Image 1: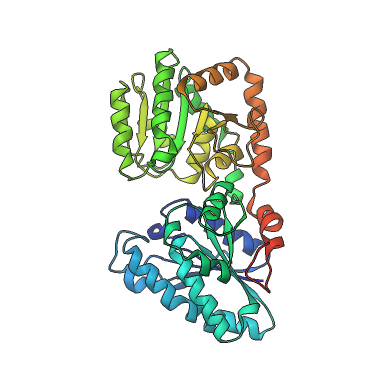
Image 2: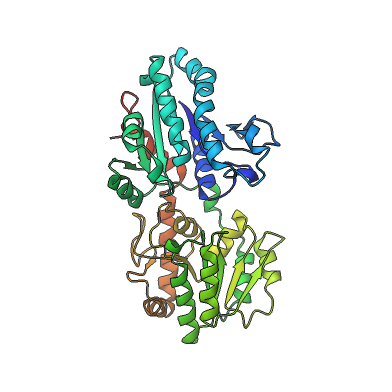
Length: 416
């Protein structure tokens, strides 16, 4: 089967902005490994070739004529790119890929990601209807976040495409806007399950042997409950647990509020740029941290180091007020990390068995929960094992076979 994925983000550094890049890369790679023909259309690096095949995946860099004047990445000039994407890509996609596929007696699936591609799906739906080939392609539009949902013509989109969301929370948001959606969870790529080097994890734990190591990653977003996380660290310190908090945020304005809260809590924070981009480099950069409470990681943590940090931490905080993407916790669980979620838990959370859950999210509740677990090392080991078993059910090939392929219906724009 031929699949085309439309997304602003992709594998180039220019287009590697958030977790959407991980989703689309994992999706197209898994589709290829399952024997399908997979194409990714994205806002790629203007300095690279327009089309290439990498590990079996066909990459198409679109809007390069705009990106060469926009050096800030895929979302630099977002409005102009979204408009051009919607105007120019559908006719090109039809004449050069979809039409030849149809003439060969085959069908195709087009999956568009996030609000920036909604108009592209509407244009493609209209174009296919004009040429009488609409029944030969299944159009899917997927939401991974709430951004831009207020900009979509839901009545038209519901008629044009099957609507999917990455989580139950997003399904509820789409329903509030008057449309229905099917939940198809995000998956994990094969390398997400690669266990980190045990010696590296051991050195990390030894370096912080008398500390409570907590890790949290995500955008500086109020809904990420960063302020509640700072309150947890502060309460742990007040009760003598000597926490050290590894925080990796973004460039959003809420970060300023987070650092004011750190200062007001009396916590000591340092910024660190890990030029080596490895966990070993992180260790070398963090000698003599006895008085440090918060380490603000300002450089990108490459995947192998993320996995090692998740495994080596005592707790990986995934306590967002809501979790539209549903991936951070699974990434940590895949390598045996101990995840603590908020009350926005997804289907994979089984309280006390594969994760820890904070129903109210208060600092005191976290400390009590941590105290109960600390005195039961066998409990921690059981949670790590159960987390890995759970995460294995969300490998991309399993998600595609179980949740995605069965819902494809070529005759009508519905996944029901």
